[in-house]
Image 1 (tube, helix red, strand yellow):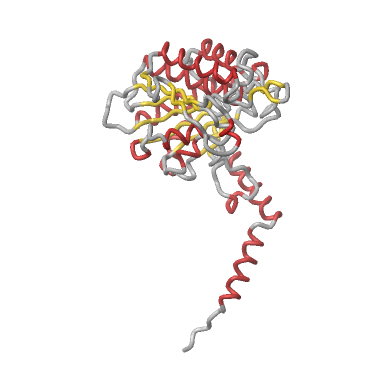
Image 2 (cartoon, helix red, strand yellow; image 1 turned 180 degrees about the vertical axis):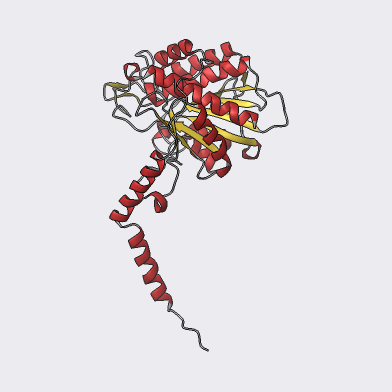
Amino acid sequence: MKLFRIPLWLWLVLIVAGLGYAFHPHLLEKLNQLEQKRLLSQPLPTVSAMPQRLDFQQQMADLTYLASDELAGRGTGQPGGLKAQQWLVTQFTAIGVVAAGTEGYLQPYQPRSGKAQLMKGSANVLGRIEGSDPTLPLLVLTAHYDHLGLHQGKIYYGADDNASGVAALLAIARYFKQHPPRHPMLFAALDNEESGMWGARMLFEQELLNPEKIRLNINMDMLSHDTNKQLIAVGSYHYPQLEQPLLQLQQQSSVRLLLGYDRPAWRVGTHQDWTLSSDHREFHKRQVPFVYFGVPDHAHYHQPTDTIDNVDQEFYREVSETVLDAVLLFDAS
């Protein structure tokens, strides 16, 4: 029996028609609604309060300084950004983490494209804590310290984005200096996130990190603004082995931890996908598993009003303790 064969041109017509249907605006919005329903069907918090293990008073002092007039929004290459670099070096020194840059704690670099190539003085600030088991792969904790800086006569303070993540990074480093982990840990305050994730990219391009020797990247970017007590954990769609620890974390947290914001448009339509939205992108591009912790976008995002006055302090404390629990879970497993 002769098989019926569809001409190539007809196959192309069918494929184009199928894609057109798949990305029809009404269908995309329907997929978005289904994804939102999936997110909100995840468990509500069962814990009423988080323990106090981090030095939150010091953490808030750090956040306040990072979001101060003196640092003027920490723009890369601007005086405030350079001052933030040196301040971070003094903090890493005081904590006692081992210098892990190419020049002490600093890893200077020069971006090669885009608007970032016009910025001078870019540098990551890197410190390491050795684990009790030197055979285990590295846990890399990241938070970008740069923000938009001074722009058209206005200071973009970047309290939530991302002074909150950097202050949490420092607090967690202090904790693990006093409570040594099993895994070796790198604490990376990264530059140039706002202009193309150059800081994270240079960790690999300058070969400070080998992807094959990293267990996990835990990225913190915007932790302090309360939107219905929601904290998003991004990454388990791409790395299913992370789902079970994160589900356990849901049961330990007093904030509403939602696993998502990491699914492609063909599954979630117009819903946000944060897979490539912060420094974890450079780890993901190299097949390194990541968890990105962040809050939903809010009215102060990338606005001069992202100030210390709009930080929700108790929510921020609970989120920081939740991220600490995440690091402890991954370190123990």
